[in-house]
Image 1 (cartoon, rainbow, N blue to C red):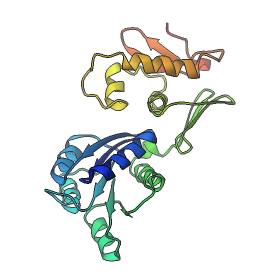
Image 2: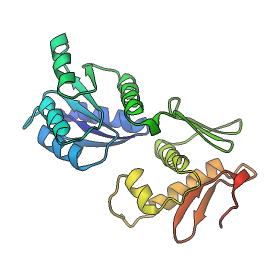
Image 3: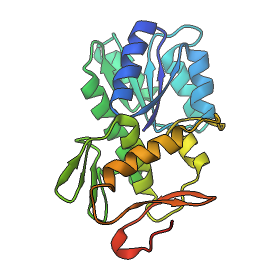
Length: 231
């Protein structure tokens, strides 16, 4: 998932960003309410995590303005205020869930995934499968046949994106924007390196290849039983 964290406490933000990134998510950070409003309005996120007490513009007014402008991205509100009236105010402002501090990062992650599943039917499938390759989003595990494959967070996100676009040519631009969050080509071989590493893990030890390079176009993931390999 691509997530925006709006939090002015840099230490708390760093903990949250790292925890979500370690869970395989792509995370942006806004340090105040004004920046959070602009980023939440101008970018496509799967979910927002918004602290209630923010400088320049408080969290509830950020959410209210996003909703007024037609942004329906699921929002999880973070706050030290735990009274019922505080939680009700957050939900009435347009928040979808409310989590009080201190919190466990795994609970926050699980709540975000639940929000996204409810808001986006395409995300309801927590298990993806192409041929004998299986990916479990909840357990964060991948198998090919009976073999468990260990992937790093970025490799996991890359594979998830390819599996969600099974049989389709995925361009470098698509990968940069959706897996690396680059809206420009950084002129590095980062994609080639990650594709090579992923291919070595999901294809090298098996009889048939699934991850194909389409020359001059990009890459695609295919079920070997129903496709012809492209060199």
